[in-house]
Length: 361
Image 1: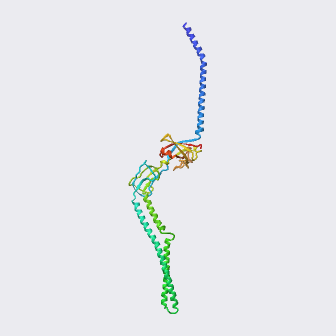
Image 2 (image 1 turned 90 degrees about the vertical axis):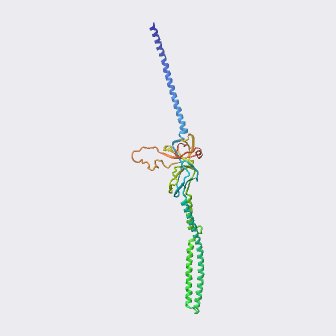
Image 3 (image 1 turned 180 degrees about the vertical axis):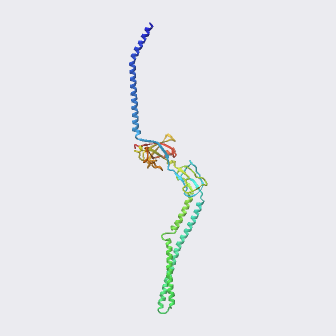
């Protein structure tokens, strides 16, 4: 009896499983169909999203994270030799245009200025004497002209009387000698006048060459004295300060640098394949690692470099020999930044930037 009941239950279970197999297979097939449809829908959405991104972003913008802040700084060098007596600035200090950076001992320059002033005064007096001598020479010529005329008249009169025997031969000879002496004296005075006039011809006392040369020496002495104080050429931040009090410096020795952070720009290094549509004036958006994505800088393309870094290196790469592997080159693109944004969020030279150029314009 028990065996019969167990057999009946087993047969019922087999019939139920047999009846359920087609339904399970149909459900699995339906599940696979739904999964494939979902996957196709996801692919379609991804393709549409990628197509939209390429249409509105991908083909309009090129980007790089190989970009760095730069600025045309100034090296502070002395223009006269001297000993440093004061250095009122330090590294990282912000300075204004015209602010004193380094002061040299002015003693030597002051002595040179005093000597130049004395020489200028002496030359001015000597040139004034040239003009006075010229007037004296002209007066001397006039006097000798009168002497010659008188001697000529005296000789003519005595020569006429000598024919009648009223004048002796000695008197006539003395008169002739006086005439020749007057002629020689006039010629000498005329030569002296010509010599004096040659020294002042075409000029006056103020514009005489000797005066101008002495004035130039005086101006140079004044300039050298003013150069004992070295001032900032523009607003910026002091960097690489090596000036020390008591240091003897030569002309052209680098003492420090001034970096104009308010005139900073960005050198963005783009791959050569990205530069086909890059032109001057295109809009650039940038973010800095210093401020993150919350601060966006805006700029414009100022120009493209004349060569890659490898080509302009001190020892450029030589690809004509040996085994060669092509390396994608990058070309620096200079980007000018908005001064107002720079004043609100200052940058420093060398900071990393992310740059994106809108090449659709």
